[in-house]
Image (cartoon, rainbow, N blue to C red; front, side):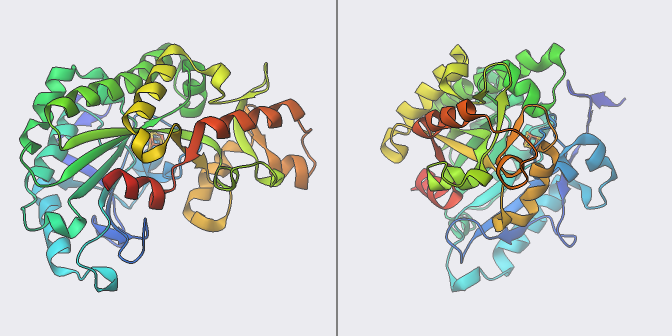
Length: 353
Ligand code: SF4
């Protein structure tokens, strides 16, 4: 009999991936390049974030029709990964990639898929691990990790305890309160609060797992904050690049400290404390892509543009098709005081140092 998860997708013995020229495992430019990273892209997601750069293979209705999305058995995944790692030369004649990254869509769609990923990592032999710098990063929205009981989660990850690599689970936070979460992820109001809380609890659960299994760790990142350019520059002088979701009733941008609920404040504090030595007293933020650096990511911006809660500096300053909101622009400074840009070269490199 078919089994379905809490989110409605069928639970199967396979995992779903978006392939590149038919290949599940590829390398990409991320962090110092060469060598870059090894990457696999899971398909489908239990959320539907407006700015998602992967929406063509993460949003359910898109992924279902995408010809590059395939179901893969665990044996094939292990096989392709080991073949790639042992036979394809590492760019720049290096001895190791920066790290191995599993990104979304959402890898942990249900408990079975989480167990499948753990099984896959279990199968990586010791001599392959140094070729990805003994460093694995898994990006997730964390909802499943917050729904599963923390001791159960510990049991799921325990087979990885003696592996030579470190696994960092990167939990992508979507807003600093349930209302922001609901808007960014387009989640129905009846479940938005529950899912929001789940991805916050995921951070606490993973900290619990880490205290018992030291090579399994976590980090969190504020997803879809402000435009990348302004985050990089560290100021708002480049006004046409101002991009942010905001609350029209108060003109406060999402993630403004006045919008944080208790849960966000607590995770913010936990993360800053945990990573003080690496990142000082700020929290990582992924911005909304706003320029041609990552062309593939600009489709997320396209989806944001007409939303009533989206402030787009390009429309305000270049096209003058929207009125300027001075108050909102001033509030943006408070974001920069609390967050830093999670540029992979800086953020991931430090994570694994
Ligand atoms: S959680 Fe991640 S993969 Fe899923 S829709 Fe949001 S941004 Fe895309």
